[in-house]
Length: 84
Image (cartoon, rainbow, N blue to C red; front, top):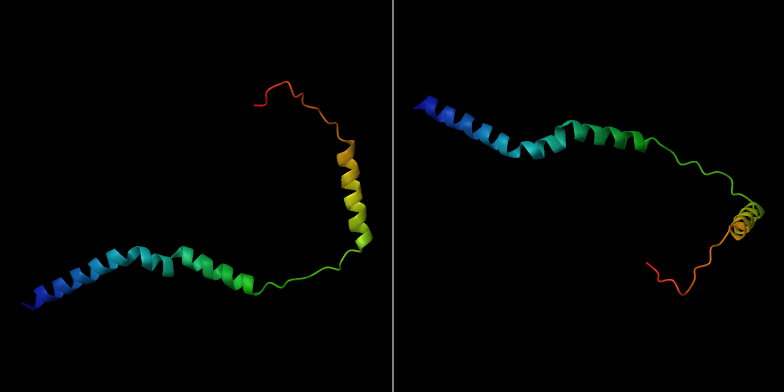
């Protein structure tokens, strides 16, 4: 009778492991390892902030873009043609 109890216990353990396998692989599988590794790498990163650009450079850029947009050709739509 003892070996039947052991066999049932082993079968129960295998059944539980089989049912919980997707959850186990999330925690201890290779995707979990990759997440932990990435988290460790990101913890060592530091944010470096550069010097602020003077406002004149930003203003020059904005003016340049506005000038370029104004120079683009424009096609006028006729009101008598139906729009699609």
